Structure formats: C-alpha cells, structure tokens
Length: 114
Length: 250
Image (cartoon, rainbow over all chains, first blue to last red; front, side, top):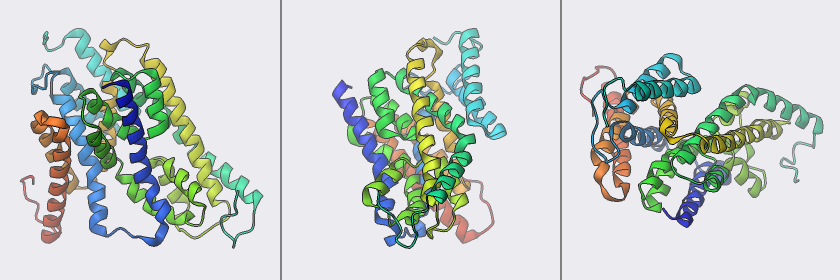
C-alpha cells in the first residue's frame, strides 16, 4: 500500500472507533437495542477475530494450507490457546506462545521445513 | 466547563474524591493495558508500518483489536472499505457498551459525550459499571469516569509508543508480529460466551481459511457472516430444545 493509502486506512479506523463507541453516547437513552440485535452484536466480534486468527495460524506465506506438525505457528498457537484456557492471563500467554514459537524456530524441532 | 446537571450543584470536593477513587480503581489494570498496547505497537511496526504511520494509527484509532485486524489486510492490499467494515465488526461490542454507558451522561454537552465515548475502553467501562450500575446522576460520577479513562488512555498510548520504538529495533526473524495473533487469540476466548458462540467461531475460522483465495479479502467478511448466522441458528435450536445436546456443529 502507498503511504497515503495507509493514512486513509488510519483515518477510516478512527471513524470506525467513533461510530461504534460514541453513537449511543450521542443518541443517549432515546433508543434501545432489541435483544435479538444485541445477541448478534455479541457474536459478531468473536467471529471476526476468529476469521483473522485461523488463517494466520494455518496458512503459509503463499496461502497454502499447512496443517502438519512442521508448522511452528500452528503448534505455538495451540500451545498458547491451552495455556490461556489454563491461566486466563493474556500477557503470560503471549510470552509463552512466543517462547514456544522461538524454540521451535531455533531448534527446528520438527525438521527443516523450509 | 458547563455544569452538566442543573439538579446537582458544583461539588468540587465530590469531584476530587471521585477522580481519586476512579484512578485508584483503574490503577491495577494500567500495567496490563500498557503491555497490551506495547504488543500492538510491536505488531504494527513488524507488519511493515513506518514509525510515523504506527504512531498515527495508535493515536487516531485507539482500538487494539481493530488495529491488529487491519494489519494483515493492509499487508494483503485489501480495499479500504473492506478494512473499514472489518474494523466496524470487530468494534461492535462497543455498541453494546456505549448503550449501557451513554444514558449515565446524556445531559453532558455533545462534544464532551463524543470524546468520552471515543476514549472509552473495555476495562474502564467494566469497572465503571461495577461502581455505578444505575444511570441516575450522582455527585463525583463524571470525575470517577475521568479518573478511570484518562490514565487508561495514557497507559495505552505510552505502551504503544514504547512498542513501536522497540519493535523497529528487533530483528524480523524473531517473528514478534505473531504476538499480535496471540493477543487476538486471548481476546477471542472470553468472547465465546456459550456453545452457540463457539459454533460460530469455528465456522467463521474454517470459512476464513477456505475462502482465503477470494478477491479483495472478501473471504473475511463471508466468514464473519457465516459465523454469525451459525451462532444465531445454534442459539435458536438450543432455545427450542432447551436441553438435549446434539453432537453436530452448525
């Protein structure tokens, strides 16, 4: 992306923040969200984040599927997920996951996979 | 500054107390907020943004998960409207938060309501609603909110800037950008509030992988849609059957 395009993206992200966070401060208590819509709003962010994380972990640089054990990101990701479910601490999980990834990378645990 | 509630006289003592109380309530979370900002800062620089762009992004967007979500899209040259829609969807939880918090301060001037909403983060809102579940006006309430939100904003920004400058000093073989993926993982898990959400998340993830090749990164939006529809369908089935858990997903 060109430099100016990235700045447009940054502006657009700011607009997205304002739209979602400030709208109901501005309309106040004049509007109530129906329960059905509230549920949809509740499910959407988890789905969006999952849709970002899954490809990050299982797709290689050329977009090829890498489900083998030789994929260090997949292993580190799963290890981090289990760690988070156990400890429920974000920072520790990130450090743990990065440690696993680094060890796998440095020692080529599952053989040289390019 | 205008007096927000004509019913309540200016009470500087209550305001000072409220601010102090808000600050003390938020204090234990500030380190975590700063560290999380640092991770996002590192991820921004490692995904190829310049120091200026990354600093601009953290100051303007002030939304960790949306910032992280935008990085792979920027790297893949996705169209701007796709990035906008993605950021909007990732931020949707704040619509609910703002609907909860907005009525507390509905009498403040427009501009103040706008910027208070803009800088409200998940943690501040949760802590505020614990202290003030009821939207009725109370002395020191606005000061309490500010005592929570201003330090929160600074902790985040300082953390991010440290991450941005640290990130550009670290070699790229360390794959520090992966810390961003791990961070998203950690925000996703608490959002999986029931088995319907879990079904939705699994369907969204698998769809995103399968639809990866679609032009304009539309696979992402398709995945979100598929996940949401699945989650709603699961929920309706569960409500109908009340118990009786099937084994199939979606």
